[in-house]
Length: 243
Image (cartoon, rainbow, N blue to C red; front, side, top):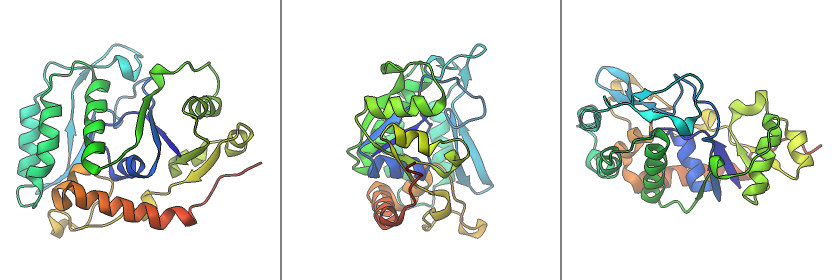
């Protein structure tokens, strides 16, 4: 089974579940960078509510994700300080920072290299054995979105696509089926697992960076949470059209 997404920074739990549950995860780095997306930022929970942690970037008009440079103003130490301050009362904050610190401080010039490094280290910490691939390393002929997805699946020798519910609006499951690709909807937003989150008086907030869960549960605990969620959902997951 394959999952395809633009490379995110400090990804949310839905992405991390794909790291654990899928055989192949393809990072779509050969499309245009969209300002305001999750390629260079994500959310954490603080005493003052939800805040963004952001990697500043420099860019010219219309570059691809793989062409985005990290701005000289990026301050890894400040980002790590903000995370520690936000989760100072959480039991596993040091465990989370142990994985984050070397990547953030590695001096990456390109955003995609930072994200790939971080995703790789997160996958390792979660005990995931997923194969990571980049679309920039594939020969993909121009075509519509569905044709490109089918080509990516073929390149990776995968025929089951683990698809987010947000793609229902445009994903042509019948066309993919004609290419031999079956779609399974992961519907993660509707089944987002809950845990003992920091700052409980604010209530549980879903869709945060995996950092939030790891500070609460540790890497092994987060992996167990995601594995349980995946294993219980997959047998009843809805499939896309086959014709």
